[in-house]
Image (cartoon, rainbow, N blue to C red):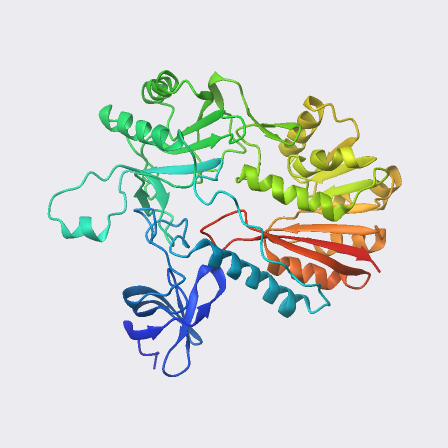
Length: 468
């Protein structure tokens, strides 16, 4: 006999923060109930979303007592859109919990001696801090409860963001609080022009329609703007008038692309982009450096807080000027070029060929002559032959993807015995796992969480390790 399904739970007291941005309370039988969009201290009725043997996932239905950690969300799409799930929490409490996550993760997963972990460094901007947003078109937008209750027919063409839990569920966004102007104006202008000119919106379920996706990049430090319009068909009678309208309406757009993508997903790294107007890149500045950001380039999405993150990384590296530094998972070489003036030489390694080309360009335009960059699978590139060709590292900086470092890479780090490692991570759990493996030869001396994404549960963490 299967478990009895529970439709809702009355009078649940939210006890504390939990993983993935949820909070939790306890059922009468002691079962854990994870609740989204809640705060410790809330008293509420909740609707069961998912029921498992050991826990229940739920969503708020009615709140009777509000936690004093709460604030009024400023976005009309809060609770439906998949972003900014912590807008209802005061920022100081967001930082407290993110710091708590790092502390508990290090204590429970790393199982090694760690120093005191200070409060996460907050972002000066908590609104309009992102330099990149991607919006999806749909001809069957998700309706709110209020719209569903109305009897009139609704225009279902929308341009916006995804609802959690559904690849085909997209809400139309009126105003997004994540990216500064002119992002909202550009998105609105695209939507209005498409409606007025009856350009077909995409349907992801049936893979039909024309307008598919738009990416807007705003260089917060220079004011330059890039727009990439992604379409599904070759019909230029729809594409060209729209991109020309954007060029005419927004002179601040300095880089305007379009791309025809007929694949099953929206990634464009393997697609040929057409430059309709302007330069093929925008520029960001950091300290005395200029970075070119192309349509396929990676750049930290919170430009100003990236400077804080990289400054802490450089401080933890404690460079004196005569060191050889290996920058693993270098991406577009942002960290490598940032720390180069403090080192004798910096060698960056990255899996993506295009990223390495960006890294080389950024070194060249900044007259940096002591960096070398190599593309390839980290665990294959970083081997004895590579070390023999180059000087062994005195310091290693590593900033791997969320999955952390491969065991082969960690084994090589232990073999190299660099005097210092600085480990930057967007996932404290896999970072803690790797630190546990490095503990054979390294001692953790400093830890500093950095908040790159206000109103989300995500946290970056920088760790300094010294050879024992």
